[in-house]
Image (cartoon, rainbow, N blue to C red):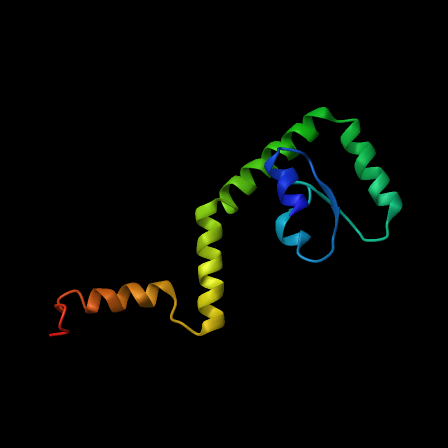
Length: 111
């Protein structure tokens, strides 16, 4: 969550390639990734951003745009719904829409 919050605040993020971080940060596009337990790589990434204000701005702007597109409340609600439906074994939204269209001519009694 901290990474997403920093990205939403247009801050350039430097993170290690662990867990789901790689699915959020595209290295060099909306943030920087370094290998875990690589202090020299982390030092180089920090120094590189400190010395390049335009790159800091670009990474921060692209991070904000990515979060704004992928983590809106509507996008998150749809992702949660899909996850719950998958866990519960319910049909996908496209199947539900097709089923509703098939029953559009059925009245309240099911006739």
